[in-house]
Length: 212
Image 1 (spheres, rainbow, N blue to C red):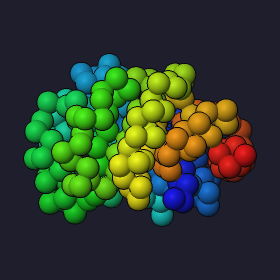
Image 2 (tube, rainbow, N blue to C red; image 1 turned 90 degrees about the vertical axis):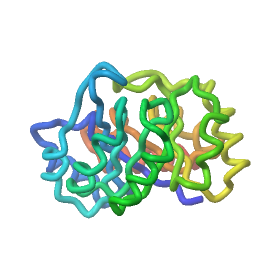
Image 3 (cartoon, helix red, strand yellow; image 1 turned 180 degrees about the vertical axis):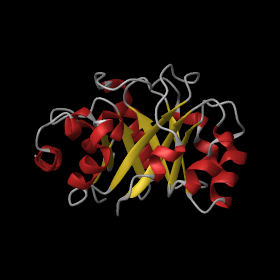
Image 4 (spheres, one colour; image 1 turned 180 degrees about the horizontal axis):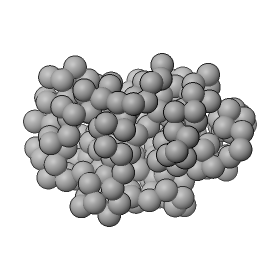
């Protein structure tokens, strides 16, 4: 499957956000937008109005790390999101969240934390566009890649040969190949891109590392 890079703007400079997003447009496939409520994970991040201000040709992918995703869907649809990723571990009914996302004209994707077994999302695989397997504990940028998630990626790829499988957390030139070799094809990277002086070169370096 085609490898897709999704730079996470959580690691971008907030004061230069529009410029930094513009810089990666030629090489990225989408932008990954982490939304946190301070409850599901400790930090809080962007608001819908922040996302609405981002003018880009890249697909806006919103990752809801929140207790109640149903409370956020309409606002982020209005902000221009095209794909909503929410956690199976959230407190809302998974089927209802999927239905609400689709009702708002967006694609629905499902995420799980590193310790959550794949069995938890099996009933929903035919209903979602993509599965995101967290390769760090959600909440903070800059954590180390958890190798223990690799068997889950491999298992999911066997079950769904044509589904987009995304990984998020600890991605660098030294870990991207592990994820891709296991079966991931959508790669979220934050500090590995926005933490570098030349962001276009950083993306190109990740793509090269994934293939070597």
